[in-house]
Length: 376
Image 1 (tube, rainbow, N blue to C red):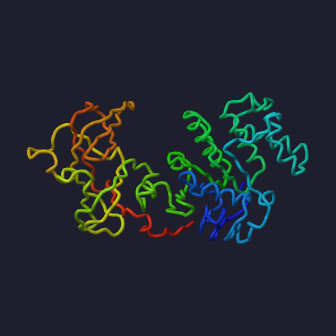
Image 2 (cartoon, rainbow, N blue to C red):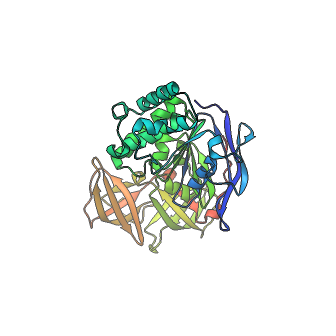
Image 3 (cartoon, rainbow, N blue to C red):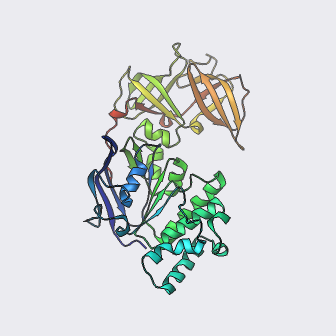
């Protein structure tokens, strides 16, 4: 369906009232890619999407499609489809008439419109609902209509702005699968905005993590999941434990750190240094809950706190999650999150350990992060 080789954003930026909502975005997207823009509200991801769509003019930079500049073109001449968070369906039109609307505006022949609308509705599995009004459909079905309306135009690029945020948890999972299926079966090129790291990881070929209008890291889901370049990126990649700490020593790429409120030396961890660190530096330690090993007996006869890399603590909360339990452990001034198959007692003592390679130690300042080179 895509009829271009590459889409290139060069130094793209957008300013509102003297404030840069988006600054210096450089990105090349290949035909057929699924790229997710990921970050919290206000990070610039939706601004970037609206600039691509032509809904916002650029303050600086340019957008090129196969080397030809398109940021000066109005939205309708860019040939992109867009799926909004709010669905944006016409409430007085049936499903098939909503899907047909764009083709009618293009002045397509009636027979072609009917054929393409029928095929698009079939793709999103709404054949039995073609005559219904949007108000007669569930939220998930309405979002399918919005997707059909976008793909029926056979766009070179589909832009999706948090399309699942209004759905409940089960529908989000179902629609995630549906979007990925459509992307693969149609060969769509898709740019998808989300704040949900699970959505981004499951859908995208590449992720673009953004902060305050700037790109922090770009890579495959595996690259960002395993090798975040800053604690900010780690936070979005499932490292729920983002802990302030102080470096005690650094040796051979490993850093020993002290957690706050534990001056007796009991809560120290050894992790892999990401970036240049020195003794005394303020850092952030990133650990996934499932990388902690939870022990309910002291590690060794010498007692807790004397075994390197072991963190003693008190269980403050236990949540049942099926085959495992989510556990909150208080140590000094720090709350740690872990997972374990055996539920400890609330108020009981536990000892946490984690492999050195699973404990990532980052500079505290995000300004220390080396700018990421964005490659296609």
